[in-house]
Length: 501
Ligand SMILES: Cc1cc2nc3c(=O)[nH]c(=O)nc-3n(C[C@H](O)[C@H](O)[C@H](O)COP(=O)(O)OP(=O)(O)OC[C@H]3O[C@@H](n4cnc5c(N)ncnc54)[C@H](O)[C@@H]3O)c2cc1C
View (tube, rainbow, N blue to C red):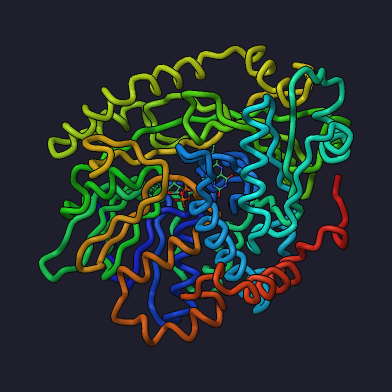
């Protein structure tokens, strides 16, 4: 054990998009606060936030069919789609504030305009898509959405997907131009560079091993310096656990009552990446399909143009699978080690309830490359195996908890902030909609953990996020203003941007 011991106002565990966002918000709201970051890897944005580990969709429910469910009476529930869209508008406003104030530069290095398309086949799915379009297209948040079941029109929108397609059942698509591709890895790195410039103390290759509360109410962390092998102690008044899949085990170490009866269910992912530039050049959109029956929402297949390292790429997936690891760089013992006496019943109940899901995920894991290419051919009929490589994506740890509606051990597909009653510690669990809603979720952390400062901070929050505290849906004028302002500031006006293909 080394005798290194520091005390700061705030400690952030993990250098992913969530800590990056919270640190950046806090530096604007309370510039004098001292912030320290501990990250076990040697760089920022290397786990789920890395561009190769997630799908880079700026989730705003423009094309993701699982955010609009069909109700028993046949109508479409759009409430979740509206919520997610509004949350993404919050992210875009904050990023625009950072760009406008030169706190980060070159927005095209992390966000690009890209049409978002939903594509379905079969009469029933076409009817669903049509009803979804009718429910959304008059809404100002979804302005500009088009529907077509005309193969000629679809050929214009998605030529690669229509080439050599046998059309023996109805097909249809919706398209909206205001979608985005977001490189969350690049954004995370930019935000950490900015935090470093602001004097934030960032320690890479430092793994947090234990957390405990001191007698004077501070949080004390036992941190292993992975270079020297020594163990250091660091304390803070406020602790944020933004360790991605690693958050649950660390939250459990705090011992706070809110950390009990919660479990984690890891889901792994794979993408197919196209290695043929001629094929890549034929597609320009994110195209989301419908999840297979019995498949979890995070395995909805999509064919995505991506902008990585200033180059156009084409990815298909993710194929979900099962792995007991909580992080891509985690251990096969992670799932087992997260079972504690207080969450044993919750975990067992979840295991029983989700047998079919586990079976599905294991089957998915075992799929051969040829079987994956067959799934890809639903999107790209003439896909050739040699044009596509498999890459391993990030791990998602879904939250398991007891709920009133679902009962014991219910699997959650959303994002959850867990915080202590006194606001001294907060953790982020879950992974969906994920990075796109980081700003909204970190504002939630701020509201819960710093209620005493909110009044004083509100004018600054409103300067950064003009729609803060306002329902966009009830203010169509504001939606138009925000769309125009963020498109201008983040260079999202597609026609003006050079296509780097
Ligand atoms: C396959 C896949 C597809 C996705 N697609 C999308 C998408 O299209 N759009 C979207 O918005 N979101 C998407 N997501 C979700 C999104 O990637 C995550 O929600 C987001 O990146 C989580 O950020 P984070 O900061 O919480 O975690 P991470 O980025 O995982 O960062 C956590 C950090 O904590 C570090 N850490 C862990 N344990 C410790 C420890 N003990 N000590 C020190 N450091 C530690 C890790 O090394 C890591 O760097 C996807 C995720 C996956 C896996």
